[in-house]
Image (cartoon, rainbow, N blue to C red; front, side, top):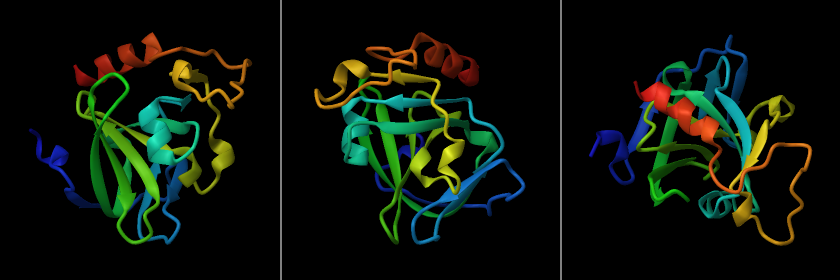
Length: 163
């Protein structure tokens, strides 16, 4: 098992480059991040995202790992995604803000939670996924392409990153 998937592994990485287009962090400011451009933005209604956010969905921004600058200490929680893949959720050790997720099968990408952006209005979802798992009290935005499970485009994108 790769070291970055060891249970509860603590990570501290380099200082974020503020000149990048997207910046954000936790509520207390102990963790900060920056990245230039997302791979995609979407709303995920899978049960894992519901548990990790405490609500109906997660507004996720997929980011190439190599372009993500991160500073601070994150504690990781290991779980299982809707597809059955091992997933880690990272949160600030000081204030508990959930910030980031990553799938073991997609080590080249991370998922940032849009609510942690300094400017959350930069989040513009292109689709909704795992809508079959959405609670009955949720109204899905029908202006967005919706997928009952994982959109095929995201799988192909992750496959190209792994090559």
